[in-house]
Length: 425
Image (cartoon, rainbow, N blue to C red; front, side, top):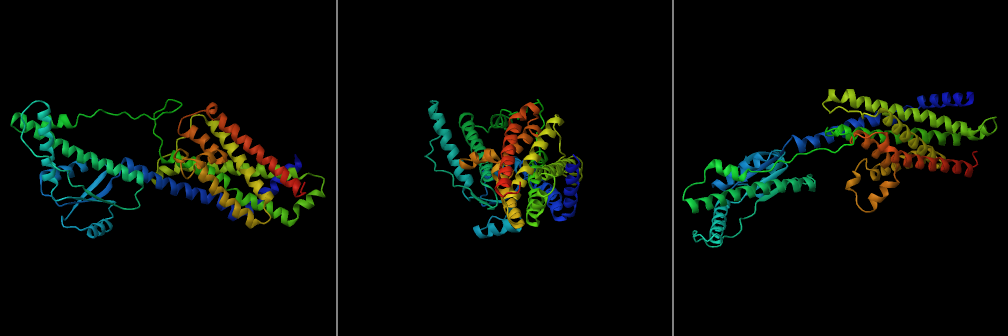
């Protein structure tokens, strides 16, 4: 125990001298968590609270186009601004850039005429199908399409939502005109406004309930998604300090000197694992504390810890041990510090990408989805998400913990084989 304690003290002193490594393990993940959470929180707000700015150039002077603008405004996801009705395509693009608008819509000049003709045609067909005499209206052509301009930075999923919203507003206008025409043909008077609203706005409500394992109904926020994910990233980034430390000891001949002493290098390996495992636990404690106490002061949602704190600690411990084992494995096989840092940084980014930290696993397809199962970060993330987002407990994350332990044991065996192969033990 004395040898192990002395070696741990030595590793702690070496770690404290590595200011760059400490900054990479603590400062960079903290900045990353704050920045990414702020960005994703803004995205959540864009979907839930904020509105997309849209410029509408109305070249029509009829009633239907005004109703369309009102319907678009009532959707709730757009901030509507009107521009002069003489805009060309280039002028519309310039106006969008000048006013920082994401969308632009041009309503054709014959919009009201075409909608009115189409509604009367449909009303006449409906009356004839009922066996009634309706106004003889020749078959109307399709309404000229609206022109939608969008900023290329909008993702396809958001563009589809925009199209769906505008299409629903357009359908509402056409349905209103058809109802008015049909009612006037039957009763020879205008459709009462109250009846019109009842017929058009008779929508069935939809209740949205998040599914959780503990029965809670709290909707996860951007902090709940990002803090656990980037805590895992920070844990694995100890490779920048630990991997380099292993390489430096190999290059400096520390391994050879240890073989001449009445001790075993496994004491040094275990010491580094204990030291850096404590570092990963400290990283998690710091980042979680920021999410709980600091985030509300900078306008971000607070982090809500899971109810099963024991499960959270065990998951963090296993994730940290897996990260430390991977870092030592890279350090054992790297011949230079540059190799350890370069391969370590790139491999962590790759593992985090396929593991679901950067792109959600449910959005992956084919090979990428299968490859996620081989990334230890994937199982770390699934464990944290089960606790933070789904309200799970220790029983719910046992499978993930076992898989992480299997990966860690494999890494430990690879470390042993590498040390034997290089004749370091």
